[in-house]
Image (cartoon, rainbow, N blue to C red; front, side, top):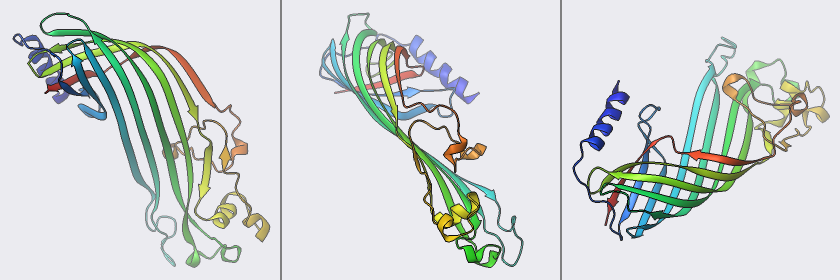
Length: 276
């Protein structure tokens, strides 16, 4: 209900506005995306800045910065072993990061007193990564197998990075409902390329990893290096039990890169503030 009221309030401001002055040239502009039906009403991941060189020309640049992480307990303290010793709490963790930049140029047209339609072009570059981790509790020495009093906590990680770049031809419009504030939309045609870095499997304790997953029974197998780097995208989700410790069991094709040509559309409500 709060999200609906928020949207109705924005619409009310737009459609009940008096005559408002749009850009004249020389102003600066900061813009964010409103997502009233999303998890957060304001999407601050991407912020756009514009500098109006004239009333019909503007330089623009969008900056994207985002980071999320979460920690989840999947074994409570004492749940694996209740005494002598009490087993520790074991956690899972997920993290995602993204950073990008998109410079561009806009040509605005006369429109109306409140409306400023435009065509634009922007290039972009973006890179991101994901890491999932899961903890285990067990022996990290062959002589300690079956002796919980000397078990240690160790972890397995899956991680992968990606990068993308492209060029967008855009059209849009800004509707000013005051002398400083507008709402708008933007869509267009875009060409993009995405490449995926190697998928990497890691562990904080190689011996414990081999005892747990490779049934190590001698020093050679206990110390064997894991095949930790594989070409192409490998989807993983530790919360769904999808964390890989042996790539040989994964038989699906791995996407190395992707090229796309098609529509681009900003599904959020663009809201901006104009200032000198």
